[in-house]
Amino acid sequence: MNSFREKLKEKKRIVIKIGSSSLTHEKTGELNLYKIEKLIRVICDLKGEGKDVVLVSSGAIAAGRQALGGQKRPQTISEKQAYAAVGQARLMMVYQRMFSEYNHIAAQVLLTKDTMTNETSRINAQNTFEELLRLGAVPVVNENDTVSTHEIQFGDNDRLSAIVAALIGADLLILMSDIDGLYSEDPHKNPDARFISLVEEITPELIGMGGGSRSDVGTGGMAAKLAAARIATDSGSDMIIANADDVNVIHDLVNGEEKGTLFLAHPNRDFDLMDYINTKYGDV
Image (cartoon, rainbow, N blue to C red):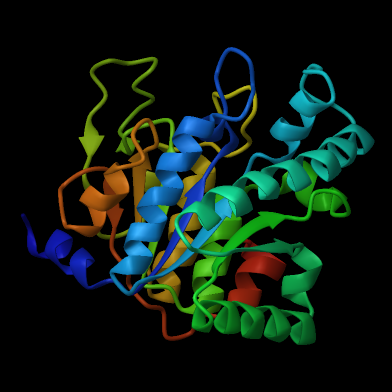
């Protein structure tokens, strides 16, 4: 176990992001309740160790899509908003019920880009997170897709999770994905692609390794994850990309096991979250 991984045991405030494709059954698009229950069990166990945990969860549009009859992936903004309105309620009902089985409380936090760019709203959001964590709740965060047309068109929860990590001063961000981590090329296209276990600096060469989203229900590809890594590491948080096939890998990661790709924090003295949201938005 290397020293960088060993330090992961000391992390106290963790943001975990999981995407739509990791929360649903591939063939039907229905919520994968078995996997969600395992994820919640892991989070509750981390809470039992005294860690603060925030969950950034996609899945509202996918859940709404199935609740409304399993239609094709929505194409128009109004379709996406309608699916999100139905699906977010359904998703939170599942989270509330399952967290309560482990004697924990889930709290819904819906954010938009406008929330973050408005100083008063941003401070209010930050204060809400702090109070929820103080009270022992698990904030469950998503973009407010029902009203935020810009977010639906251009946003993704990889960047959102990094912004949340920066906002609350998290020291670890874990992106649960459909891939083991970062590769030199897309391993689905090139079986000889080289796996990268540790990233100490985000370089132009590294940025060139980003690709698109493979999933029919997700939005974030590797490029979005690299953008998230830039936001998180500049703010002072380590970040890991790991495979969501088995969510128990989260335990392995916080225990220092060498799984996934670890991006090391390199706090930027001039870091300004608004610079990333208003101008760069973590673009790579």
